[in-house]
Length: 78
Image (tube, rainbow, N blue to C red; front, side, top):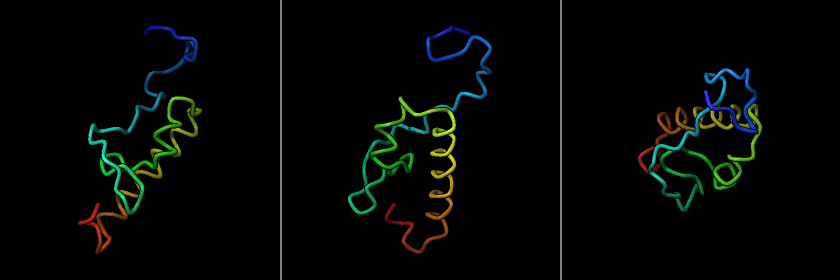
């Protein structure tokens, strides 16, 4: 593992949340969320400076948004 100033040398790489970006970077005009990762613009912009807990929270919220989109009658618009 390569040590960086923001990564403790004893950090578990599995603990470091990867960006939820899936490379489909298009913001829905109505929801103001990326249609690929379901993050808000604020969440996308702040990702690099978020704490690990904040990143985990964003990932959890995105999973809920994805589940809601699948069960919503308006899910075709996402």
